[in-house]
Length: 319
Image (cartoon, rainbow, N blue to C red):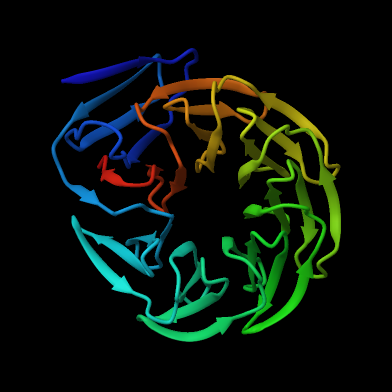
């Protein structure tokens, strides 16, 4: 059986889609989908594995290439060659809400217990304590320090177990973080703004206004650009140097919860409208619409170039 999706443009990049489906839909076979960007998109279906991750809150690629999924039940689930292994992080007293991999390969986890913890082989090396509400996002800065954002409306920068900066300015949950290619730290908030920070000094460089809903996701693009997505159903492409909005992408019909950047610089967005879209970030043109059939919550580009498309619960993996 094949699926065919028409693409409005011609370009020849290939991409493998790794896709995670939710339990809101009937269970389907896992699929092998190859995106051949010519005049069409075709995929062939092939049964592989189905996993019930019991509400995935976050996901990250580990240094050994395995995928780790955060869980609201104090732990991680790690996918390896078709098998899922569960690791309970006993030092947390709440679920895992955010994950990041540090330069030394250790894993940082943010939790609903208001703490960030750093782990090596399941052993907690240190706890980062200071936030006063649950952790929503983590990001590793270019100097190796860790940034965390929280429902307490702040961003904190950590060197080891010491908080060296508290970034204050947002007036609501700071839901998402991204480190840009130029070293700036971007934060997106439920106050509908994006802020750009100097990751070294902690100074706020720009406050970007334009979204009319919560900012859900951020991703760094090439040439000093980055993108933000929002509850207002749009994606915005920004120039990080000037803080200018270059393009507003309006094709999605519902909340745009997830963004990612492909190795060739194309921008990918995932939405509650049950689609994934691929964009040329230089001109704001939608190159491809993929009707995935579920509400997309997260996107992740792996080191292999594969794109992970995720929701919260049932997991189907496209090889």
